[in-house]
Image 1 (cartoon, rainbow over the protein chains, first blue to last red):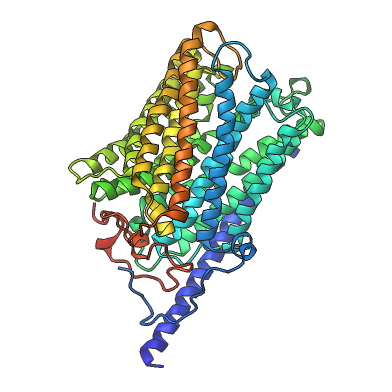
Image 2: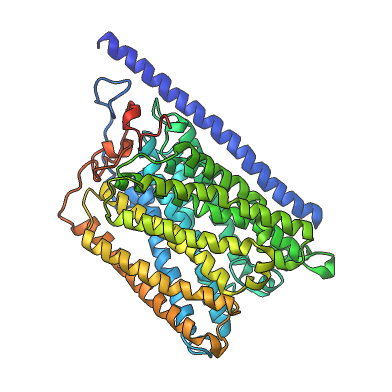
Amino acid sequence: MTSSRITSGIADKRFEHGRRRGVRRTVTALAIVVGAFYLLSFAQILLMR
Amino acid sequence: MAHEATHDHHDDHHHGAPQGFFQRWVMSTNHKDIGTLYLIFSLTMFFIGGSFAMVIRAELFRPGLQLVQPYFFNEMTTMHALVMIFGAIMPAFVGLGNWMIPLMIGAPDMALPRMNNLSFWILPFAFTLMLSTLFMPGGSMAGGWTMLPPLSLQSGALSYTVFAIHLMGISSIMGAINIIATIINMRAPGMDLLKMPVFVWSWLITAFLLIAVMPVLAGAVTMLLTDKYFGTSFFNPHGGGDPILYQHVFWFFGHPEVYIMILPAFGIISEVIPTFARKPIFGYRAMVYAIASIAFLSFIVWAHHMFTVGLPMGAELFFMYATMLIAVPTGVKVFNWVATMWGGSMTFETPMLFAIAFVILFTIGGFSGLMLALVPADFQYHDTYFVVAHFHYVLVTGAAFAIMAATYYWLPKWTGRMYNEFWGKVHFWNSVVWVNVLFFPQHFLGLAGMPRRIPDYNVAFANFNMISSIGGFLFGASQLIFLGVIVHCAFFSKKKATDRVWEGARGLEWTLPSPPPHHSFTVPPVVHDEELAHGHVND
């Protein structure tokens, strides 16, 4: 394996790792937002009952 | 353009599609296959919802009760709307997004492929459940798609419909999270946010709208459920509730929902017109900001659906002016589409014909919307056929025509074969003529005072109703040509599509072979500005 291929392999892994970390963060943030919206919607049902 | 960024060779895992039917289609995690599933589902629902519309127009062909009982007629209007909105239009856009977003941004797939599979497979169950209520004792919901109490509370099918709507909402939210996570994180290096195709932008903004309003719909229908079965009185004045509360909550969801059904259409038209005008889109940034502005405004106009319920004067003025404000960013978009065509080397293949029809006919729907935004005028038009004409111009010649434009535009890329241009144009001309025969007279019926959602009417409305029904039958029959063109292209066409398909097409998706391999962009492409979708870098 040439050194350029080793370097590009490392860059690939970093890129893929960055993507996965970004996806995890985005999904966590959106899940919290959606969860809060659903909770609010159903909390008002309980509170206003 | 699509050179490999980080590899100088290409030897890693290139698997084809799974061989077994069950493995490929039921267990699929591939964005192209799931996109295809969504589109097939949408087309099926389009014909089911369309058959309900045929029943409606057949009954309205002449005054008097002809074919069906009034309750069944009301079931048809309700189910037609629910099927078309949640089963045909929305899944079609999700399918187009699934197919095209990863290809347009240079991603290997959606960010969450397994959730993508779940998002789709919830839908057939939800709609089977909802449509099965038509065959239950007492029938389905029949109080209109808005499910306004107290009328909707009389239906024995409420619980099934509410459960189906919860399932559709969960599916939409999962789809929206997936699309946002994909666009934010999976773009190829160099594909900055303001270099993305307008279609991708339109979907990003639509996905945020979905996340914001679907839980509100869930809350509203759950309150209906608890009012009917658990002794609450949210909407029951006898227990201190108020039916108008439901309308506020519903339309806080309902108006952004209208934009959920039209913003991706704007994105599609912004892809098609530059391709066939052979010019970059005019005012790329203005187009993106206009979509964002429309999305924002959609949250502060809900009560224009409720002008006649007795709102305070201040509220009526606010919602009237806020609604009229939407015409500004919408006007920017229409102006920019026209300016894109201005001086272009235009050709008129079927996708472009549908796109031009969209610009003209959607604008008619926009103008009638402006008329409805005026409080004093709305008191006259409210709950008449004028409203029916208005929203069908927006959703049929708007959303559905954009979906048809997108299908003709991307079908050669999906299948690797060209569709039959002659029959595509036959479909277009039949659609554009008959859709106007169908819906334009409904403006006059509404202005003359014909109420919506009635199976019988005054003889004074007979002629325009007959014309409208003839238009409806022929528009419905024209869609069989659409089905024929798609089936022919997918299975029988001998004419191979090139990679770029259209001479003026720009963007990453056109650098892939037609059809694209089962796994595309496994190595991220390098994005060169001059080859970007419609060169909008420095405008």
